[in-house]
Length: 286
Ligand code: CAA
Image 1 (cartoon, rainbow, N blue to C red):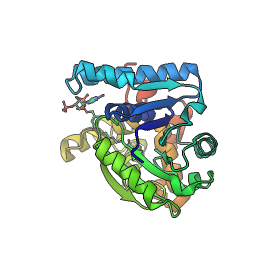
Image 2 (image 1 turned 90 degrees about the vertical axis):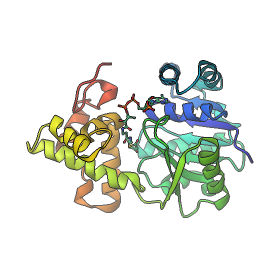
Image 3 (image 1 turned 135 degrees about the vertical axis):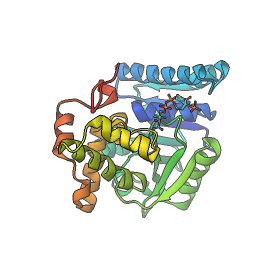
Image 4 (image 1 turned 135 degrees about the horizontal axis):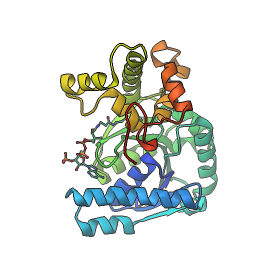
């Protein structure tokens, strides 16, 4: 079955980017948000990104219009009924993701539809077991900003069928033009298992007074040619998401290197979540 009708659940930072790249690839996309207000904000996020791509010459104006014409952002979960692939991108909260997979199992009618999660860290088996079709559940993990970064991690659980995995890889590589790497079903998969301890180390360095935020980031940009420093990257990912991923990793492996430092916990409690709230380790115009 060629995947032409795609659903996305959640139109935040990741969901909006995923919806945009899927529509750019020519698929029909339905995005579901929790309510009308969130749906409107999600569509505005996609429009802004498409406008940026057109302004920077990455898309021509006609293609930009076509992309927006292929997308619907709605608040009705039942609109996912006819989808051949659904990518869940709700916040990184296990109960929320489990509840979403239960609903997807009830609503999606295609018997062999692929139900994918964009989770950064939650083991896929926990989501698969919320459904009656674990053989069709897998992880398709995109990277932020989704229209810019080419990587997708494919995560298969012990119960994922080879047919669902093959269709997901073919969609990500051939339709979306992404670079796919495969990971076993362990919290954090490949990239976050490596990235999160690095980000947490930078936060511990700042917390201990070892160096300033600016100098920590400049060190990694100027000294190691990273496109951005670890604290700016944490602001981009969102401090709440970074903390949720760290907690999943810590729960899975019980290694101190994954434990969120108190400074990160306090900032999340204070609502200083990074770019999306205008303040994290650095300040941003909103
Ligand atoms: N569509 C298409 N292209 C776009 C675009 C859009 N909506 N927005 C920006 N671009 C393009 C720009 O045109 C530019 O392309 P060229 O270099 O060819 O001109 C390029 O993307 C970079 O954009 P900017 O000039 O605006 O910004 P920048 O050069 O400062 O780069 C950045 C910004 C892309 C975020 C870069 O700093 C970067 O790659 N940082 C690292 C991000 C990263 O590590 N992300 C992974 C986070 S971890 C994650 O997501 C997973 C998780 O589970 C937590």
